Structure formats: C-alpha cells, structure tokens
Length: 247
Image 1 (spheres, helix red, strand yellow):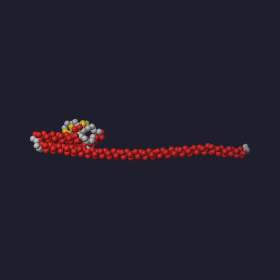
Image 2: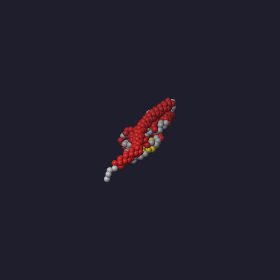
Image 3: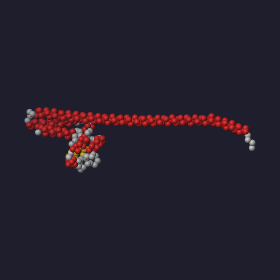
Image 4: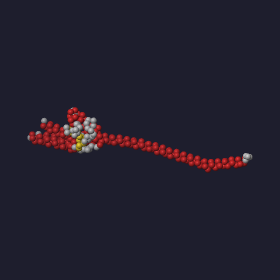
C-alpha cells in the first residue's frame, strides 16, 4: 500500500480549518458564556453576603434598641414607684396634720363645755379626723395601694412570736390574703415571692378584696389577722387619740 502525501496534507489542512472554526465559533463563545456565568455567580454571592451582613447589623441594632427600651421602661417604673412613694408619704403627712388640727380645735372648744359634751365633741372630732384622713389617702395612685406592702407584710410576719405566728398561719385556719383591690399577676408574684417561704400553704393563697384597707396587704384567718394597711393605721390612730383624751 502506497502512502499518499497529498491526501495526508489535505487532511491536515482540514483538521486545521476545523480547529480554527471550533475555536472561533464554539470554544470562544462557550468560554465567554462560562466567564459571564462565573461573574454573575460572584455578584449573586456578593449580594447575599451583603444581605447577610445587613441582616446581622439590623439584628444587632434591634437588640440594642430592645435593651434601650427595657432600660427606659425600668427607669420609668422606678421613677413612677419613687413618685408614688413620695406622694403616699405626702398624703399620709397631710392626713396626720389635718387630723391633728381638727383634734386641736376640738380640744380648744371642749375646754368650755361640760365633761359629757367634751367627751362627745372629742369623739366626733376623732371620727372626723380619721374619716378625712381616709378620704385623703383614698386618692393614692392605684399602683401605690399595693406597692411595697408585700415586703412590709413579710416583716410583720417575722415580727410575730412563734406561738402567734403558728396560730394565725395554720393551714386549716381559713388563711387568706386581703387586698384593697384585685391584684395583677405581677403583684401576686411579688407577694408570693415575699411571703411564700413564711406561709405554710399549698399553692397561692385565696385573695379577698376589702376597700377599707385603702392601701396595703393583710393576712387573715379564723385565729387572727396580721394587719398591714393604711386602714389599720387609721384605726390605731383613732384609738390612740381616744385613749389620749381618756387619759
């Protein structure tokens, strides 16, 4: 078999032409398309990374804003509590001053009256002083009627002697909590936290409302009561005034 150099040369030319055509019309466009796809993928990934960073920054800003709002809320609550305490103290001082002024006036008028009339006038003045004090203290803010009294109630429990404490806090003695109004969940939790370890009772204590407390929290049972309210303070003040005049 004889080798045909012309045929071989023509085949080489054909191969060269085919390679040029493939490179010109196939490989180059395909390479361009692949490059564009890579560039697009890179842009998408970069946008996704930017979005992720923005989301993290937004989350951090939201957490910072939430912390700021919580801090402001706590500050407002503390300020409101301080204002309520100050208002409560001012009202109590005003009530005491009003009661003292009425009593002093009654003393002056009673000096020129008979003994029976004198006692009657003093009793009426005492009742008037206590009633006026009650009306003044009834203007206390709603929150101030309960705020701080859970800790005072715990202190009152601790101040009892062992026998009296055991008698009042017996499980089967109908022990219940008395408040001037219905308690919120937050207030009830504060009461349970303050006296829970001191009161032998399964579950939350029953709550009774008694507006005559005006402000405060008391524990009552069939065996006695732990007084811890402005109403009780006014009763003690009335008794002290009457005892003072009798003496």
